[in-house]
Amino acid sequence: MSSPFSFTLPAELVAKEPPERRGLARDKVRLMVIDRTTFHVEHTQFNHLGQFLRSGDLLVFNSSRTLPAVLNGCESPKGPCVEIRLAHHLPDGSWLALLLCQEGNPFACGLRQGMQINFAQGLVGTIIAQDEHIPRLWKIRFSKSGAELIDLLYRLGRPIRYEYVSAPWELDYYQTVYAREPGSAEMPSAGRAFSWQLLFTLKRQGVETAHIVLHTGLSSYMDDELDAQHPASEEEYLISEAAAQKINQTHQRGGRVIAVGTTVVRALESIADQAGDVQPGHGYTRLHITTSHRLKAVDGLLTGLHEPEASHLDLLTAFLSAHQIEEAYTEAIQRGYLWHEFGDLNLII
Image (cartoon, rainbow, N blue to C red; front, side, top):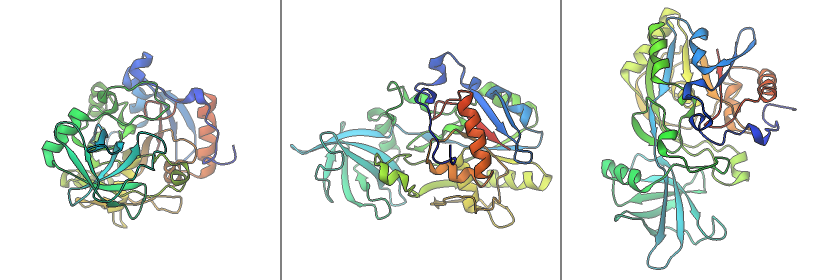
């Protein structure tokens, strides 16, 4: 294992189904805790999270709700059929999406500007243009918008499923218990293990909570060469006045701000000033965090275990050195931790 970015992940350590389907409560997955000061690594169960938090700490959650972001449609009258994976909702009301042909080469079915794709229940998508930043994505405008479109997505769509997931699990398995605002192409999975019971326990312990929104995009463009480049997709975030106030007050009191997920880190670090103060705001971020980034707003991170070469590993090096990540991941592999959205978790604090 030469670096944290090129390790070998044994196939048996991929979580193929939700923990509930493995006989576990969602809050009883495993938790690896890494102390940023001493570099001590501890292994426990997620529902013991409170043992590593203090009264006055603030957990910041991403309350974006996962969309059933996969739609199937065909060009009429006899054009190609495509699978659409929604990636991002854009400010002008259009969407960026990955379009995969359902026969032959997934990217070679004559996709072009002006092409109209028909879905069920009268929904039509018109291709506007290729994305200038990520050419695999296309800009699409639907014939419906707002709540009407979201309602149709929930009727017609299904959650994005990668090949390592053993079955097409229902959308509820891809939601956190506190999710509110629909908009994520894929689940902000770091918070999946929280149960209401654990949240109430932490509240009684004096751990504070705040919610922001960052609508997550696609983790893969189904192109190994492109994925290896880690193109920074533009993701929409919303930080309310109440959330910004809680974050700033936590710092003023000497408490720790702990991001639940890399999405929260990216949102807060995008909007924080040099003193670490966070202002409320709504915008889009392409921030790619690496070891050279000085963390301003975030003191700790709860995250999943990231696969070899993932860009999230770059972000972890803002919290720990590459060598420390390497050692911890080696230990996690030796102890049989599970990877991906239905797997185990890592607290860096």
